[in-house]
Amino acid sequence: MAEEQNAAPPRDFKKILTFLFMGVNVLVLGAGAYLVYMATLGVKPKALSNEQAAQEIAQFEAKLRGEPVMYTMAPFNTNLDGVPRRLIRLEVSLEMMDEEGYEEIINISPQARDSIMRILQAKSYTDVETVQGKLHLKNQIVAELNTSLKKGVVKNAYFSELVVQ
Image (cartoon, one colour):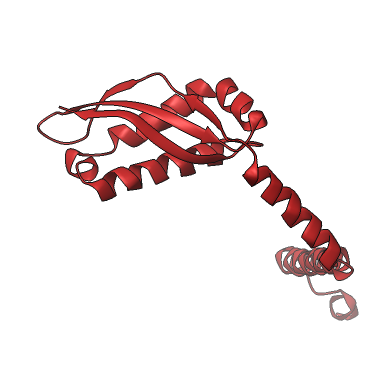
C-alpha cells in the first residue's frame, strides 16, 4: 500500500508538450519583436538642406529645359474591343526627356509596343472617338511606358496618324 501512495501519478505528455510548445512560441515571438524594434529604433530620414534641395531642383529644371528627343514608333494596326469589330491604325511619336531615355526606349521597343498594343486592344470605338478619349489614351500610353522605363522619362506622346475603321 505504501508503494501505491509513493508512486507518482502518470504524466500527460500531450499537456506537457503543449505548454512547452506555447512557451517556445512566446519566446520566438518576443525575440522577433525585439529584433524588429532594434532594427528600426535608430532610423532617421535623410536630412536635406535648403541648398541641396535648391541644387537638385536646378538640375531637374535644367534637364527639363534641354532639347527633347523624339522617337517615332512604327505604325500599329490592331483590332479594337467590342462589336462590330473595328480596326485602328496608330502611329505614335514619343517625346523623351533626354538622350538616355531615348536609348532606353529603343532598347525596350518590343516591350513598349506590346504595352501599347494591350492598351489599344482594351479600348472600344466609343473610347477613342472623342477628343477626351484620345487625350486619355495618350495619358495611358505615357503612364504605361514610364512604369517600364528605369532611367528615361516619356514627357508626352503625339499621334502622327490615328485612323479607326
